[in-house]
Image (cartoon, rainbow, N blue to C red):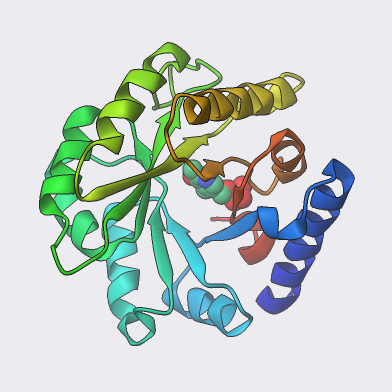
Length: 225
Ligand SMILES: *Cc1c(COP(=O)(O)O)cnc(C)c1O
């Protein structure tokens, strides 16, 4: 399927899931995950109307930002993979969003290194909602304390939470756990607007639970090598 067709099909899935959940379709943003796909694929998706792109690996993401420099200002670049503290500077300089923040040290470095000429860097805290030892992210009971500290950093804009629930029969419950945590933080006074939840396989569950941003790769670009 051409990228423009699979992008449209994905938008239809999102809209249908919103209708089924009684939510307005504009309540959910689509982040197109372009990891492992070349800059030419991003260009094709951009031409078909996509504007927000997610990359997992810092080096690969920076290379694509560079290759697509002519679209800078029109594309919003999101880092959705893990970030080590020795790689924060180029990320603070080149990306618009970072979804995988799970340590204060990383957040502090991003805030210090965010160039003054740019708006504050948008961040989401990553939550390990499934508790799998292989996954990064905060434990559920660690989230609130870090959220309040990150919200106070001057060059960051804490937007919300991100998670990758474990596929399987317990998935919807994990999506709902994330939505509850997101609501709790808002009642604690944090001005959050982004629940980054749902991928190609589980975006319907995520939208049912309350996701505001789904991160979709393979349903748009095809299976990764
Ligand atoms: C790869 C990836 C996605 C996209 O996954 P698909 O199954 O290809 O839609 C979303 N979020 C994260 C964190 C990822 O690593």
